[in-house]
Length: 496
Image (cartoon, rainbow, N blue to C red; front, side):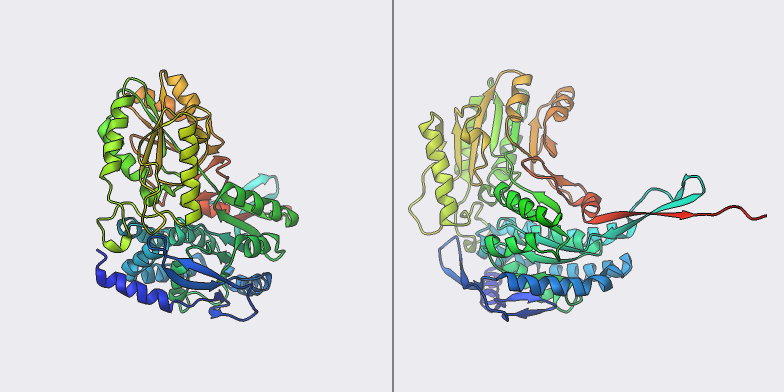
């Protein structure tokens, strides 16, 4: 449990976090920056100081350090690399409450949500440390007569990674763990809005990771991210972010024919049939729809409900939304809904709700920016959302759940799939046969049945369509960050 003392310690630690790039094993301010970037506490709009805005020269220095470190790190045995990652996981576990409190302050997360995320960081490191030791390949053998074939699984090289502001440390771990476990070195750019836990992780890692294995360059996507994507010394780019960011990275990476790993946006449909347990669905959606103020690419924010239970479900959802405790995470663990990340994001969410209202949708609760400091938007429920409208098809990335109606199974599936995204979805029904039919027809990388937003480190998190094509988690992530080399040895003629 995070206490008031932990929050005070976190505030003090934030003031002492090195505001510098981490290159070749040390924090540095050398090279001259492109100005500074202000950090704001989204719950009260107080200043959290500034960070330097990096330049292509910092990217050059970080890439050079990563390339120097690559032969030594790639040459270690998987067991040796695993030992290092376990040590880093131990350091995270020893600071779990502090890291969660810093995440809550920097990102406006409720303490309970932040506390759930940090253990995922160490779990990812530990899983990938072990998985890299058991990487599989086809059996060696004579696939061509007189020749012995075997497969070498090798690191890609230097990987550039860009992480988002909604899950700063967890998404960093989803990149760092498989990339390093596979023997790559890397350059990481955290979001300029929420870099603090990544910088604290670098403090913890300084005496654990060899110099140059993991480098961090602070700054904007338009400068630092673009320089990384174009850099000839980076062999692969990995990004978790918006579709627009993914398109920019892929376009830039094409110039040097880099591999690209993208985990992008989502618009997760929640299909509720007339035999579903409505209370269980509402209880789940009150978390899975409003978690992290709806700033979650797999959030349950688009309900497609059978017309016979639509009104009952909507009434239950409204009661659940109105029961949520809204506030500054610093007020304690009773806070269930914090602010969105910025004034710009709050205004974007509000504008989408206003447009839906003008298009004929009904706002049953919420839907107005509250008169208080911080970037808050209330938990909102919208019904009468027209199929194919902006609210039905576009990602809100805020605490807004929309509800549509359907009459038949085929209509439900058609509506669910009527989006460009393909990240996550769920189906709610008591009928096992229907469950299996619908699961097969939903065009999304993760489909839950009578659940939503449950994630396991052992299982892949992957999108279809505009949600991208990189796999996070599971051994599939290791596949993404390795390359396979076929070695064929001529055996020669037999000697009598």
